[in-house]
Length: 239
Image (cartoon, rainbow, N blue to C red; front, top):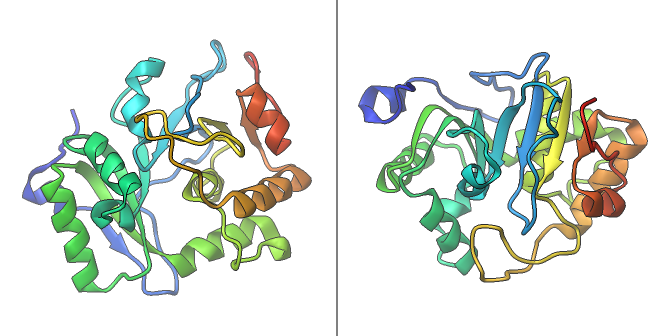
């Protein structure tokens, strides 16, 4: 069982960066990573394709059990705005995250001062959201990770969503390949609510996915519709 929750568990493994470099308290060296987004339709990894480390984005971990996948996920990435936003998407995500847990939590934030890190920890405590390690990642380092993989074609003026970023983060941390499901360039809405809210960052996602395909990075999908939209190779069986 994970030593989640409690004062000691929240202190251990807390990492923040100062705009220079960051050492994540976990990695995916040699692992297959299954990245689960929150688009209306998603599928578990194909049977017989081996073991997968599951990573989730914002509220997508709410549908893990529906897909027959283990909980808590190995890693969850969320935007700091999810923890405080008064807009409907933030409220909806918090409602499904309350009382949940993950092994390694990465919170993307514009600010990473000690005060902001304390506020993030307090908001997580209020949500009763438990974790073994917490990494607070600033937007500049997020951009550097993506630029390191996508090269000169990456344009930080048109950034992709955290869903695309989590796939690139997995590669950055040593994943052998990434399988994406629960992502869309055309369908509105989220799998964990019926609000039918529009998707954001479509231009940035489209550009980043084109670059991923052009570079031949080991990123796949098991969703035929998303494969057609994105150009990502389709993984439909054991491979």
